[in-house]
Length: 63
Image 1: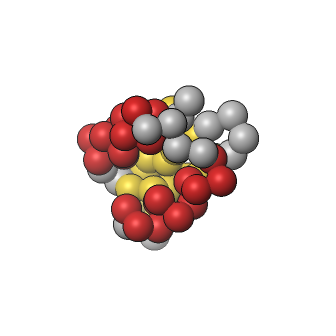
Image 2: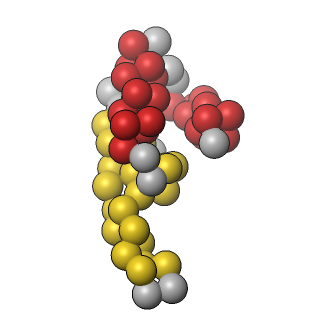
């Protein structure tokens, strides 16, 4: 099952919140600053039971 990650990043003195995706086997940080978009992607990943070996490719297509 995929879940959302939240991370604070300091970019040139400005703190930004970014969101990533985590599953049991791996995590990908900093997918997007848009929580809603990442949540919707996670919903689709879980709905279609995406194998973790394809997660990086799906995220690259998403970006």
